[in-house]
Length: 253
Image (tube, rainbow, N blue to C red; front, side):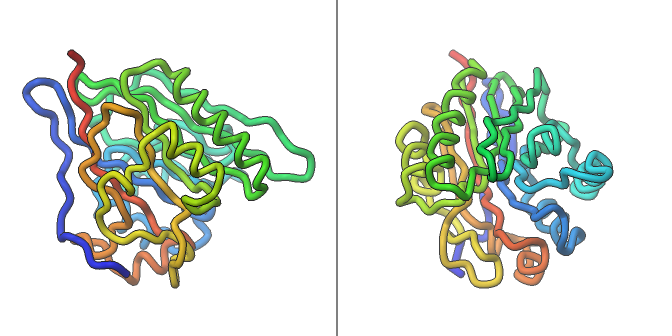
């Protein structure tokens, strides 16, 4: 993998009410792999928000989500089976205003998709967040990208962050639509490694963090080499690599 700095800006709330937060996007493949390795990776990244894809959706799914959150010293914010897989976790720094799970239109013969959304506050900064896992079907994926933009805008807050498994590389039309309307954080401030899939030998970037205008991107990429993130854990945790971003949310004027 690419080399990377040994550190990324840490979470903090500034005297003026602005906040630096860490957000992590991670496809966890229904926790079918090494859950302890996964928890070690998440904990080492010290995120304030985790945008999960492929969270458990069936038998005792809430128990599985709560167990993962507890292992990572986080709490469940929203999503899971009620969002068809996307899940949101957060640290106790987040003040939660509201949450909503959204099921997307079902295309016959294809997997049901959804969004996990929430509005939270860090310091004086309010931010809308959305975890997504877009379709494997090209046409449906493009439509879902547009629905993502509409849903993020409908949260009606100063800042927005959307993250997830795009099932498409940046040159694709759905990824391009998102990057055209939002800021692709990896492109704005490259940090760490680039490719996210497959974890064993990554050769493409299909997982991403996007932010609205006004969010300052301090760094974004795969945290391979970050202190506490072991290569063995990344390989064992799931079939995707995570994307970690440090973002600054300015205080409202």
